[in-house]
Image 1 (cartoon, rainbow over the protein chains, first blue to last red):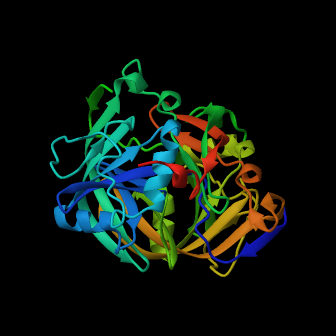
Image 2 (image 1 turned 180 degrees about the vertical axis):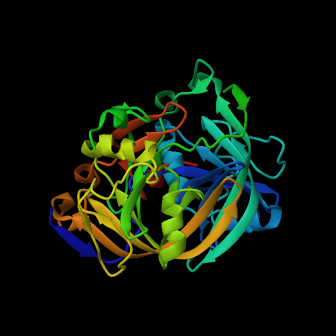
Image 3 (image 1 turned 90 degrees about the vertical axis):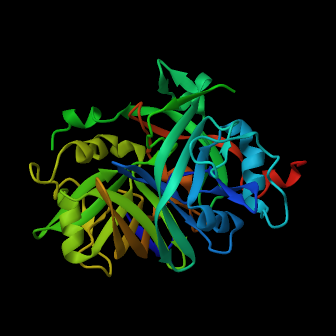
Length: 187
Length: 187
């Protein structure tokens, strides 16, 4: 298979399109992020990469808490809106219904089927972005996105961001069961 | 929308299913990871969360370099195999054709359409896992996965891991163009 060497680039596929919630100057603010990933299971933890000049980062720096919210495809316009417009120029506090769990300064977005309330464990300066490592201290899921009490990815219907082509896509069909299909491989 | 509070959990949707390459005791080793995300653009950087007892982590600790490889759906059996079986018990050095770029100890997997060669910038202890932050120093893409010289997500055909339901899924259809559909929102 012939390869082309491109400039070093952030070509991870797929990326999520999530909404980061934070409290900025007494109001909830929401920004869109694709640069988010899980890190650990004990404690459950995730990372998000944020530019330090972002309003959201200011809120996180102040309160040391934030939320990651997984939106469904029907929220695509609002998701994109929150990626285009800064909280400095547009008040995004009324865009979603906000609720709060144990972390009083971490706004959770009711319309998003999955809400992860996070407490900052550590921040790492990575040049253009600050890597925020957060412990997931609370997990809320919309009841209509559960099947037999468990989160159902098809009902959650998450947005997938594809870098370079800059599209939001939906989840496609099942390729195989994990921790299963590899057992039959003759290697 | 009624919410259910679950135990704190790593419910990010979607997650990638990537292959982490590292050199362990003179041989290339490959493990599957879903806990991977982009962090920064300058330098281009990513994170991956690894248990410290993993062979792959040992290789990364020794050589301070590794690779992230994005597999296509047709590699699902090998991807799952590399998630199930440790390099301690199975020699995975012959599972893929390996090539090397500037980072001599970062094995790149030829069959995977996207290969990111990374140098460790920092590691962070996050309890069960070590968060490895890597600068992406080289990016290779299979020529047949480019459209007009740019990586094409449909041709790359990446695997998507869905947590809890433990499935590999494919990329679905386009919902909307990013940095575009949100402009028309009346908010």
